[in-house]
Length: 193
Image 1 (cartoon, rainbow, N blue to C red):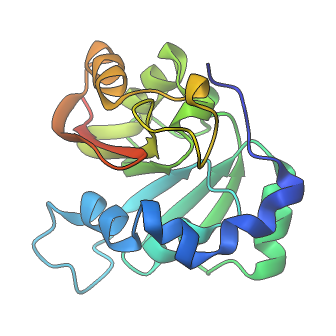
Image 2 (cartoon, rainbow, N blue to C red):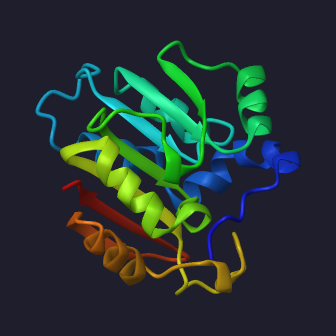
C-alpha cells in the first residue's frame, strides 16, 4: 500500500464541501490540532503541515487558526491548482514526499492528513513525522478505513484500519490520544515522541 496519489486531473472534485465535510469536517481537523491551546481566538503562533494538501481544501480551513501552514504535496499540479484558486498569505506550498520532508527537527507544532494517509503510510514517513513534529506536538490522521465498503474513496484493498495506523504510529514512538472507526473513515490523533 501507499504511493498511490489522487489524479491531479480530477482536482476540482476535491473542492466540494458537501462531499468532503460528509467524511471529515473542518471543525474536526481544527479541533484535533488546537485542543491543547487554551486561547483559540488567535493564531497562537502554531506552525503546522497539511500532508497531502492537494487543492488546499482543508489547508484553508486550518490557516485562520494557526500562524503558518505548510501545504505539503508530492504533485506540482495540485499546487498549481491551489495557486490558481488563491493561497492564503500564511500558507507556504512545499513539494515533497512525506518520507523526506524539508523541515528542521521539531519545526512543526502539529501535522494533519485528510484522506491521504493511505498514500504515504510507511515506516520512513512516520519516522520523518516523528522527527519534524516537536515533542508532544499533535499528528491528526483522517482517512478512508479498511472497515468501509469502498463505495467512496479508494478501493478497500488500498485502505488501512484505525488499528493499523495506531500500531504503526506506536512503533514510531507516537503516543495515542484517540482513535476511532467511523462510517467509511477513521480518525487517529497522536502525540509526537
